[in-house]
Structure formats: C-alpha cells, structure tokens
Image (cartoon, rainbow, N blue to C red):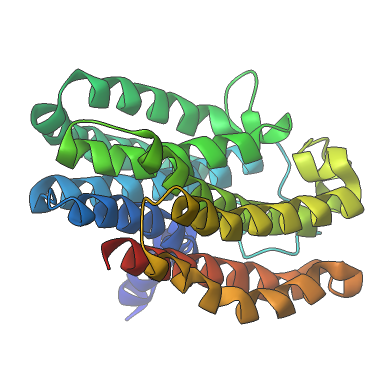
Length: 299
C-alpha cells in the first residue's frame, strides 16, 4: 500500500509539473494552423498530428524547465501565490526534473525527425531554435524570462511560429494571410503569461526576476493585457477588409463577453492567489477564441 501511494504521488507530481491547464495554449495555434490548411483544401493529417504532439511537448518542456530553473535559482519561495511547483515543494528532486526535461526533449526531437522528413530543412531550423529558446527561457547565463523577454518569446514561438509552422508542414509554403492570422493566437497566449507575471510581480522583484510586468509595473502590465486582447479582436476585421475570408471570420467576437469580467479582475481588484482564477479564465478565453477563429476560417 505504501509503495502504491508513493507511485501515485510521483505520477501526480509529474502531472503537476507538466501543468495541464497550460496545454490549451499549445492546442490553440495548431487548431488555427490546421484551419488555414483546411480552408485551402490542403490539410494533411499526419503532419498536423505531429505538429500538435510537438507543440504539446514543447509546452510541457517549458513548464518543467521553468519549475527546475526557478527552484535552483531561488525564485520559487514560500511566498509564491501561483500553483504548487514540484521542485520547490519537494515532490520531485532537481535530478528527477532534469531527467524529465531530457525525456521530453528526446520525444520532441523524435517527433521533429518525422516533421523534417515531411517538410524539409526549414522545420529543422525551427526545431533547433525552439529547443534552444525552451532551455534559454528560464535557464542559461541569460534567461529570457528573467530579463523581460519572456513575453516576446511566447508571442513568437507559441504564437507566430506555432501557427505558421503547423500550416507549413502541411502546405510547404507561407503567405502574409497566415502570418496575420497567427497574431491573435500569439497575443492571447502572451496574455496568459501577462496574468502570471502580474500576479507574481512582488515575489519576482524580491528574487530579482525581471519580467516585463516588473519593468512596466502593475498599471503597465494591465495596459499590456488590454492591448493584447484588442489586437486579437482587430485581426478578424483586418482579414475581412483584405477579403481573405467572409463574414464568418467575426465568430471570435462571441468570446468578447468572457473578456469583460477578466478585464475587471485585472483592474486592480484582484491580487495574489485570486489571480489564479483570472489566469485560468484567460487560458479558456484564448482557447475559445482560437476555436471560433478556426471555424470562421474554415467556413
């Protein structure tokens, strides 16, 4: 019985460090990239599935690396108000986390080998930069997340690169419509990080983790959050005016009512652990937007 409890505890710890609630951020760009391919009657199941697996693995890898590096650098402390971290809580040792990160990276490389076979050298280049950036997000001599560059990293790799990459492995080409269509996903995925960093401003300041939220301050972080949502909802208008899609492209506007309470929560009324609700709500809104956007693209 004791051994079974320990095994279940380890499994739960690995699930915890993978942070399942963040995985919609990996699904959203793949959905939009596939929708763009479907709209051109060029959807390919196997490359699309491999792109989804790769996106999920990279998201899990970033989560594990963040858990590991924030612990060994003393960023995660008892004052942390976010979800429990596996290393900081003692559920997993740093050595176990290192092995977990290596395992996820090996799976990602294996998945990437098929995508390279299917779509060529450009995918190899994207893969190399993605893995390097994954490790550099929280680790290395110049961790991006601790020097105000985390938002830019997420915007580029979990937004633009993820959407364009998913589309490319199926169609083997890119155009400006695909690039523009990637912006809402990039914006809303970054908005999730903004809430996370806004919640942790005080603890990050104390640990000298300089996120963009720390640089901008509370008011600036709230303004960034609002601008990211505005940019996401403007893109369907731009695509419609470009005559790239018909009126169905406005389907994402149905998600606007979900944004209003989030905006109120980010007005300064919520703080600390209460912002975990805002974080979850932002992730759900981002996923709903992406699904509605994808349907609008296809129709």
